[in-house]
Each structure stands twice: as structure tokens, then as C-alpha cells.
Image (tube, rainbow, N blue to C red):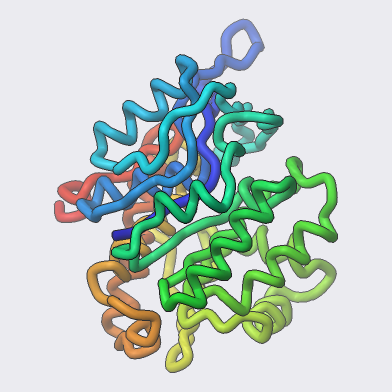
Amino acid sequence: MIAVGGENLIDYVQTGLSGGLPIYTAIPGGSCYNVATAIARQNQVVKYVTPISTDNFGSILSERLITDGVILGTERVDAPTSLAVVSISDGEPRYQFYRNNTAERQINTDLLDSVIEKSTRIFHIGSLSLIEGEDSNVWESKFRSLSSQGIITSLDPNARSVAVTDKQSYIARLFRMLPHTCVLKLSDEDLIYIIPNTSLKDAFNQLCAKTSAELIILTKGAKGALVKTPSYQFQVKAVVPRPLRDTVGAGDTFMGTILTELHKRCFVVEEISKLSYHELRKMVDRASIAAALNCQSTGCNPPYENDLLS
């Protein structure tokens, strides 16, 4: 089983203009929520372990997960749903977040201990859930604990600088988690934010020195991705979406596909470093195709298994 924690929210995504004013459509989202959706749509057993609100938006969020086959790990809670406003400029998303005292932040250690099963092989976390607050501390602690138990831990910082009020504290948390990370995926924008004022190459090398991850993937948008394991380092070209609607959820779809492929191949952490170049290349190529398919529709809409077989 794959367990996914982290935020769920409603994205108010800009989908057009009318009279010079933007039109927004409410779409279920949140980086970690999207990762769970992407995994389930590729027919893997995945449990989403973050609470969802009992409000109307929460019903939309939960019903979509259930429809796609995601297991809901917690009872819904009487707190509002987090919101994000996603404005699109030249196909690129710009975000504003509203998540104080919301449902997805109502977690504690006892809750996570009760819902993350012993059958879990992979645990994924990242994005807004690690920025600030006691919930961030809980996620960090659980991540370290699961790593010590031999579970494959996955981290995607998916840094949202607009939501960060204390960058030093946030970066310190990420650096504390890196030694306990088995799979690390981040974008070039994430890397520039985490390690600024240096070249992308030097920043990547610095990051690699801080983590024990068996698999590191740096995505670079239209420039493809850089893949690194203890045995291999190689570049993969990006797949061009035709047509390009927007890039919302592309990184989440990529991440979900990588975890899906790992779940098919690796039962323990040590097996990741034994993956052949051919297997790694096949995994990342498939993730790139999935991300491109997602970009062909508005908002995050990961492809289904059949879409990737065609």
C-alpha cells in the first residue's frame, strides 16, 4: 500500500476572461491530494491519511477520491476546507492560499499512528503541509519514524514561497528531513528557492550531499528532468503536451506516477538502488507522459491507466 499525507483544498482556477475580468472554476486539488489521485488512477492501492472537511467543498473532495478508488484514512472533520486561488499567466499558475485552522491541518501523532497501516510500503508527504504550524511538526516526526521502520519515504517540497512566512524555519525542516528521505523529487524552481544564489548544477550537488535518497529527480519543465541514483545519473527529455491548457498538477502527476512505478518494483528501500538504467528510464518516461497528458486539460486531471497504455 502507498500512504499519502498532506493538504487537500479547493483550487479556484482561472479558466477564462469575461469583460476583462478573470473567470474562476472550483476544482478539487492540493499537491498531496493530487498525488493520491494520480496513483489511484493507475490502479495502485493508496490511502489518503489527511482529514477532509464535512462542508460542501469537503464533499466534493472526498467524493472524487472515492470515485477514483482512493481509500480515505480518516473521519471527516467539522473545520472548513482550505482554499487556493490559481491565476494563469502564459500557461503558468500563480497561487494564493487560505488555510488557517482548516480541516486538512487537524492532525496529531495518535491519528497518524492509527491510520498508517503496517502494510504501508511507501509514504509520501510535501508541499504546504510542511511550511509551518504544529501539523508540520507532526508530519516531520512521522516521516522520520516511518523511515526508521524501513518504509520507503517520499518527499516533494513543491515549495510555495507565497505561503511561507518564515523561510529559515521552513528550509531547516526540509534539511532535517532530507537524511530520512528515500525518494526525493523537486523542480528547478524548488531548488532555486531552497538553495539560492548559486548555479543549478552546484545547488543540485549541494542538495544531493544533504540527503540519503536512493532516487533523486529534478524536474525542469520543458527542459526535461535529471535523474540520479547511487549507480546512474542521466537526463530525460520532456514530453510536449498537445495542446497545452495549463501546468497545474503536472508535478503531482509526475510524482504519483513515479511512486506507482516504484510500488510495482520495490518492496524495500534497498531495491531502489538496484533498479537498472532501463527500469529507471522507463519509469521516468512514463511519468513524463503522464504529466504531459495532465497538462492537456484545465487544472489537475491525472491520466488513467488506460490513457497511458494507448
